Length: 389
Image (tube, rainbow, N blue to C red):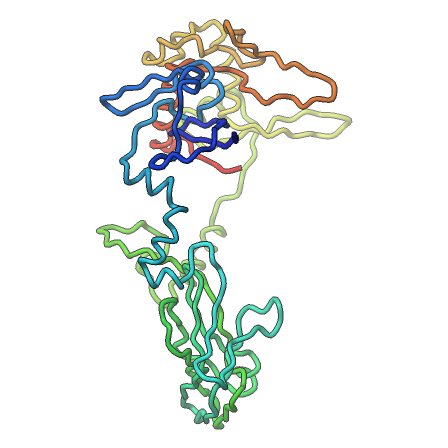
């Protein structure tokens, strides 16, 4: 027997399994499991609903409804580790190539005298390729120097030959055409360009460049009819400086903030005209003036709260939610909800034991469905967004 996490759609639990060879199946859920969860199964629509109090309280992450997936997709999801070796044999490139998790850099000698690239220090940005032949780089010209090696790069990366600082400063040597694609398996060569007035001699075994591995996006370009707008728009060479100058001028021409003492009536006029107005509330403490910032929305919220104390809850809740008025309250939430039959909301503390994590309020099946629909609707409208913490 073993306990493993199990997900069925959005339903999650730590399930206890008996380990056995099932031949054609991954898992078989028996009658004890069905008695414990008591789900509703629609065999025609291939749909399962976890609507028991236990599931809606503890087991669900979102919607209680789960739908069947095609058999080929289920096999791909559940048996991917079992078939990985078979797929590698079918695809010879995949057999020796890197996987998404393999970040190793591989080098291969193409001749006995060659040297694979090496880092100069442990935290150097790139590998140093060595010249496998001696050659001269003419003044104001260029030369192609072979390294006698080939490389295999990690998933979603490419190689870039960059200039060495010492060669660039002392001799005016730089690099041309430095991109190495991850599927290229030929000899890596370096295009040395001499910007100086004197020829430069490259000796065999000389470190002549920096091979830097950079991440890229392999997704295909999608053709569209419209692009998102930017401040730069169609501006070409030099336009970024113009855009920056315009922003600086705009900040310089921006009106300075003015602070005036106004009456409540004048404040109301500002608000009705849609002015961007804030309030500084002041008080004299120990012969000093202390200021407290408050915005219009806060002031109006305080005023609105006083006016709504005698308002019927049905006037505040939209009509489509009137069938669930029991989950709404007029005032702020300062206490836990009333206890429901069969649900213990208290937290029992015992010395020397860890407090058990539990949900404060268990929603019913209908309430959970409505909450899930409400969240999705607001996500689509941009009212809320998911965050990672």
